[in-house]
Amino acid sequence: MKRKFYNILMNWKNKNINTPLMVVGSRQIGKTYLINKFCQNEFEDYIYINLMEKPSIVKIFEENSNFENKVRKLELELNRKIIPEKTIVFIDEIQESENAISSLKAFCESNLHYRIICAGSLLGVKIRRFKSSFPVGKVQIEFMHPMDFEEFLDALDKHMWVEEIKKCYDNLEEISIHDKLLDMYRAYLCIGGMPAAVLEYKNVNEDILLWNKNILNNIVISYLADMNKYTLNNSESIKIEKVYNTIPSSLAKENKKFKYVDIEKGANKRSFESAIDWLESSEMIYKCKYVNKIEPPLKAYAQEDIFKLYLSDVGILTSLLEIEFSEILLNETFMFKGAIVENYVAQAFRANNISLYYWNSGNKAEIDFLLYNKDGIIPIEVKSGDNTQSKSLKIYKEKYNPKYAIRISTKNFGYVNGIKSIPVYAVFCIE
Image (cartoon, rainbow, N blue to C red; front, side, top):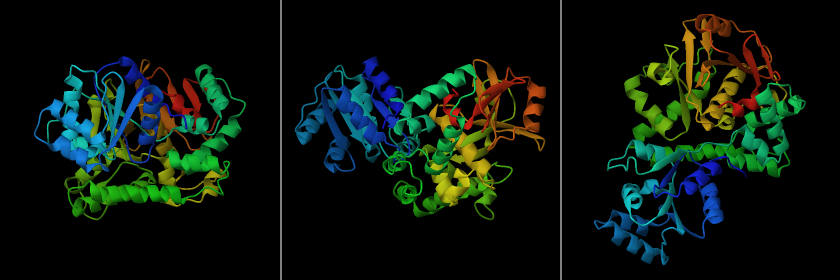
């Protein structure tokens, strides 16, 4: 299946520099599959190393010897010559060896032109807790995410629909296949963007009744298994799982600000902050921070202790909520609907590397997301249906006078009274 991240891999290749590429992202989003495909397609010679399956190679990196000697022993172990300029080396599950990560600096600084890509499960957690000397400035780090709605349509061979959405987004003109796209969008809310789930949907000819729900259940189980493997102790693992399981119910509340007491009675920041940090580092959740001042840069006015938490994949959220697909596909009204749509938007924004911020004015108004671009700070309101009445957006516009506002809803494209109407299926166009 086509992935937009392939373009990032190509850009790295075309730079033709020594800097190793490190791909960070949650489990089962297709990192290994895509990098394998890239290496096979774009290089004459390819070596794949999985450190989880090759403890003998981990041992080589752990040895107290010079870089050239390690490379020589690596070649002997693999019975393969690493030819600079010609050979691409993909080190998978590199989090298994801190010394392997530290060695990336030597690959970068070598006079020989080595091409190295690395990736791994929960690599973000490993980086955050690195005990050795991390090769800062010697590695290009790129974040990969689950498939967004554009990639979902591409995977289902609806390329023409993608191009039409982009055209109508650029011109803010109504699209003729609006209802068809809303149906596809609602299917995406059920399935999400995990490649295995999308491929299964394609294989059953887009029949949601035949789609295997256990795919997402098994992914969540594997996530929880990783928590036990890559945590400091069992107590930390339990806390991480409690936070993760709290997020769906937290999002369902009218005030979606994450509260520690929602985890358990007496819970506080000191007890659970590291658990949230672990989940955020693993790319299993996204943090949306409250901004108390509408001035650029938004990051400077983001409040670290006031935030909302979203899951990295809307399909996993729907699965954890155990919502009947019919309620989503038939566009029924239910309590969690707004939370699911907000999570969908947060996921789409992160796929486009948009930082997540929100604003509120006490109990009077709340803006779901803030976008900082060439037009300034743009308020973004998310509606789960086509009821676009909003006191919050009106209050924000009167207070800050943005160049325009964006309203995401099930309405078609349009522009009225300084508000751009963007259909939910076109969120991937917002950059």
